[in-house]
Length: 334
Length: 240
Image (cartoon, chains in turn blue, orange):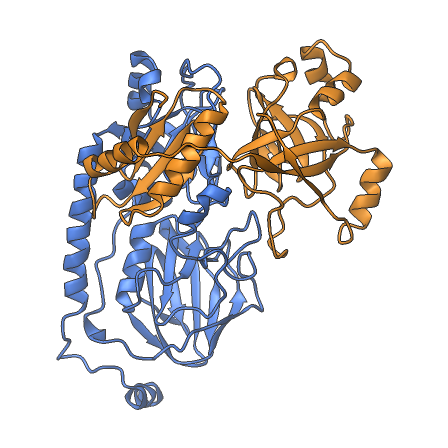
């Protein structure tokens, strides 16, 4: 009941929604960078939404399945193959014991999510399976996967209901430029109107010094708000802080829990995936919306999720459920 | 009650914001408010800091207005009666330019020699206002204002675990390797955060920290026998 890692890829980690309740102790939240794509992966394999999966970055791993199980890949897409045959993204797929899944370079977006029906049998650390590589905590021994690792699985059933309906449209991620919506940050009003406008008009470039902790942006040096010496306070997933050098930093999944730099804006939650899938060199523009508007977008997204959930749960009469003997026979004669 | 503002901070968070100062009274209000709000189902997480309490909520299940109402009511009902005996955790620190690359700069900024700087840094019992920024990073109040110094203009990419520093009127320790903008004046040989230990942290918010100066050879000795080292903890009447 396991998956053997034949190659780890660039940065493949076990993630879930992270340690949100541990922030008061200073433990970073971690968790997935693209919560939406992760949610869809679990939806496709009929998992509880909180079930941990793999976050795959830029160049994927090669995995050997040691038992039959149902898996799905979402988020960034690229070249993936199962025993040499093309393997589809955004679709629940039965894989059989002994089969090898190779995920190569991701070309549309940079982070994919692999969900396994039933999830991984790994110990929770402070209430979560999220990997924090920085603190060597959680996930698989607190680190990225590498060749030779054996990931234990929960009792994965090689069956999910309405298997044939479990596919979703593949999104297209931005290649060169992305506009993300933001709400005013806690220190927004402490920046002059001129600096606020400069922030909203500038096309920033995502610098190479960008990772799961945060994206550093170049493009304009903003004059820092007159806050005196701001005392450290809580940070946010998608918070845009302006350090003394004036170049914005977007705080992401592995962010510190508190910080002392003024926060001019915070990404609307629904647009976090746009940044998570953007890579260094791309242009970022910010569009200011109200908190009420951002919450309305969240409600719309929730409505969309309900719709997609119904869609993947439709009975798939034309399509045989992948009962095991039938699949084995299909494999033998296929 | 001190003046406060409710500032919507993101589409899923509200900041309860008190005046921008390090103040034991603010700390007490925030701790008690956090304890009270932790019982609210609509609130997903609480993040206390020096003068803010960030209240995370699920906007699909509640509204900003409802959260604001709950916070306002809770503040009105707070019991601010204070207890007295405190736990003081003693942290051994080696103050040298090797471990504290900013030691001489901070001394010069304070117009003191390094020996006097160290004397002033090891004198107080520092109240742990909050843990944040890094696992187990304690924000301490009670720094002698004369040895205060602003953060670096651009953060360092890597600061070794155990580093002790000053930023503005705050002093603190880096429990793990991290980037950071604090002025570094020394280092402790003990593991401040260790996920493999039964208690990953040696202290919690509300405790006090006292720094004890050690020599380079004591530093090496403790590093070489880290498993055997027993941290010194005392119980004292502490005046904030």
